[in-house]
Length: 85
Image (cartoon, rainbow, N blue to C red; front, side, top):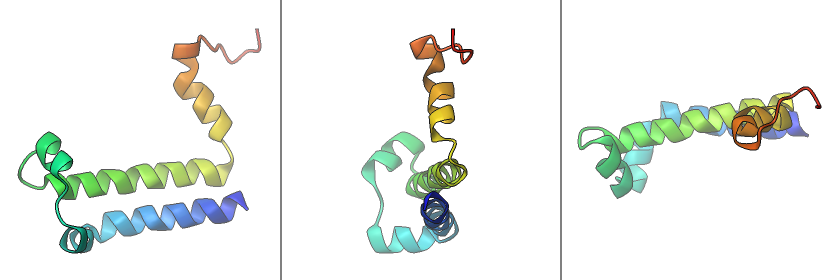
């Protein structure tokens, strides 16, 4: 089941990256992206970044490495050594 969900999320992320202009035309500009990412292409870049994050999350879900990835990301904050000590 996680493979199917991962593939769906990857497909959504790829669609978001490939069809950024379609999303911009249909959903419009997002003020936060325009403010933080610049006036030229701010929303386009924002849509692409969201799509790339979806791709990464989809790969993590599809491979079943969510726990390991979470421990790797949060390890420095939680003092997790990964050795079981």
